[in-house]
Amino acid sequence: MWSADELIVAAATVPGAGGRAIVRIAGHGLDAVLRRMFEASAAGFPAPGERPRAVSVRFAADGLRRDWGPLELTVLAWPGPAGPIGGPLAEVQLPSSAPLVDAVVAEACCHGARLARGGEFTLRAFLTGRLDLVQAEAVLGVVEAHTPDELTAALDRLAGGAGRSLAGVRSDLLDLLADIEASIDFADETAPDSVPVAVAWSEVLRRLDGCHAEIGEASRRLAMRTTAANDLPRLVLVGRPNIGKSSLLNRLAGHEAALVADESGTTRDWIEIRLPVAGAREVVLVDLAGVWGEAGETAGEAAGPGIPTDAGDDEIGRLAQQRAATEIARADVLIACRDAAEPVLPLIQPGGAPRIDVLTRSDRAAVPPCAGVIATSSRTGAGIAELRRAIEAAVATLPPRGPTATVRMAVGCDAAARAVAEARREVLAAISGAAVDEALVAEGIRGAVESLAEITGAAIGGDLLDRIFSRHCIGK
Image (cartoon, rainbow, N blue to C red; front, side, top):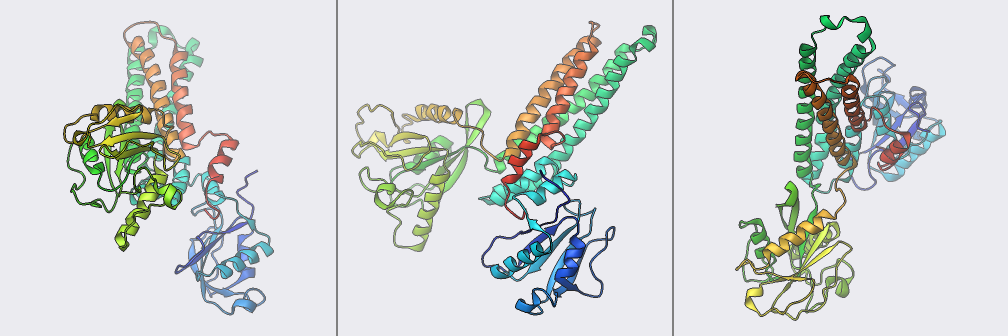
């Protein structure tokens, strides 16, 4: 069972070289533990209710000073209830030394702390209302970010704009629900002739329209954030150098996105574009440096899975090939390319992702029919429409991609919008003079409230909380 009071400790920075490491300690009894472990400067540690501050400390004489000497350290202390986790928290800032970090964690455990579980600090911030669920899961997005765009999007979620907006909508809907249920409960105490029904339902419609617009705006921002976060399906063009992969990408894109030349190895780094597909969706299409060996031999056969054989002698080429191997591993769909002039041998998949087999430059050689292989020509456009259909079919089979918070927000916003729309239809009928069942309006609004509660975490099961926060790193 999770608790926000137990005294916990964990390293908050990854091991390895760096300028500074941080150990976090939080929970009931923190002040006493800090006083046992450290000798503070004259100002001392802040008491409950005081403002947080950075305190200069040394190890206590009867503690770690015996092994580590009088190191000058800094402890950033929040006495609670204010602070990032809504309770007592201290961050001990140390030189980046793994043995020293381990020693501080062990010393805290000797004074009554236990090792924190994954995500426990973030969970406490959630349980005390310092973060909503979207922000809490954004912490995981920051930890797992692979690219600057992914990091930017995770930091955007952490800022809480969408979460705060949806929490406000939920509050407005709760007020509206209370008004409607009160009118149901006290209907017998009001004379029908004295109730301006049309005016009342017009006001309800106005409030529902405002909430529906806010949910739609949140969905729009979510879609933009998803695109920026690179949560789109990734399709990777893979094949030997100089076989027309970049020309194929340009043809699919409809513009010159990649440099094309007859010289082998023109693409030294990866290039990615956003490609619209059916259903108003987008995918990320990636063009890699050539990574396959000769005549049907894949990089995996020659040098192990995902390791290119033709990296070249120069450092830039080697780094490009390393990046290519990384992109292959990240791919949701591989578009395996071979020059039509080469013998059509069975293509071996260099990874576990679904694959589309493509022959390039089919205008340069006679291409016999081959089941499961799409013959294309970037110059004439042959096979491009068929390849697009294959891409759309492959993307349609992929599961939702992206952080749990992103998927939950998309599903929750859609469900809330549908529920508000159902309530709105009943209200429009009432305004037009038709008989209306207030209970149906209330049911629709209640469904929207519940959907939004699942997004922000206002109502969510303990088992799901365990799954969400256990995915976070220890110390987060």
